[in-house]
Image (cartoon, rainbow over all chains, first blue to last red; front, side, top):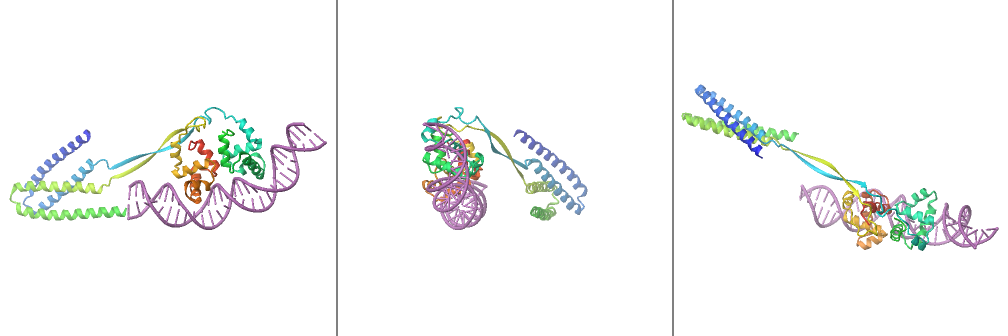
Length: 164
Length: 164
DNA sequence: CCTAAAATCACCCTTTAGTATGAACGGACA
DNA sequence: TGTCCGTTCATACTAAAGGGTGATTTTAGG
C-alpha cells in the first residue's frame, strides 16, 4: 500500500511539473502567435491532444492491475491404500459358524466370491464350472443361511464371521 | 470482436463530438475574454483539466479489466482407512471418499440399505418412494462408484469407508 | 463294494436387478 | 430470471438372479 501511494505521489508530481512546463511553453507560444487567429485554434487542439494523451497515460499507469488472476484450487482426492484391511491382522474364519450352517467348501467359495461383487457368470468362469452349477451352489447356500438374496447372504455371512 | 470494435468506434465518435463542442465553446469564450490576459491562463488550465480527465475517462472505458481464472488441481493424498472392523467399535463415514465419489444423500441411503441385504422393493417401501426411484438412485450410484452390480458396490463402498 | 453326500450340469420358469430415456418439480445460485 | 442439480416417477427393455426339478458323476467312508 505504501508503495502504491508513493507511486501515485510521484506520478502526480510528474504530472504537475509537466503541466507547469507546458503552460509556460504555451504562454510563450501564445505571446508569439497571439495575433494569428488561426493559430489559437491549432494550439487549443494541441493542448487538447496533449492533455488527453496525458490523461490516458496517467490512467494506464495508475490502473495497473488490469489482469485479475483468480486462482481456484480444486482439490483432487487421491486414494492411497492404507494398511491392508482387517486391522487385527488376517481374517480368521469362524469355524463354529461354518459348522453351524454346514456349508460345503464349494458353497463357501461361492459365498466369498459373491461378497467380492462377482456375478454368477464370473464366479463360474473363475471356478471353471458352468453357470448352472454356481446357481445350484448359491441356491443351496441361501437355503442354509436362510436368506433370499446374495446381498443378504453377504451381510449375514459377514456378521457371523464367515467372510471378512 | 465486432462488438468490441463497435464499442471503440462509438467511444471515438463521442470523443470527437465532445472535442468539437468544447472547441466551439472555447472559441466563444476566447472571443469574449481574449483581452483579459489572466483569463487565458485560467481557461488553458481548464482545457488541460477537462481533457486530462477526458483522457482518463477514455482510458478507463477502453481498457477492460482482463479477468483470468486459473483452475489449479491440487492433489490431496488421502489415506483410505481400512474399513473399521465390526468388532472395533463405531463406524465413521469417510467424508473425503464421500466427497470424491460425490454421492447424494439419497444415493448414500440406498447404498446403505443395499448393503444390509434389502431388495429394491424393500428399500422403496422403507424410504416411502417408488421402486423406479430406487432403481434410478442405484443406477446413478453404480455409475458414480464405477461398478456394475449391487454386490460390487457394497464391496467397494466398504473398502473406501462409505459403509461399515 | 456300496452308499450317502457333494459336486456337476441342464431345462424351464418367475422374479429381481439394471439400463436407457424422458419428464416433472423444487431448491440453490448467479 | 434462467440454469443446474437432486429427487421423484414412468415406461420399456435386457440381463441377471433365483426357484424347482431332475440327472450324472466324484468322492469319502462304513
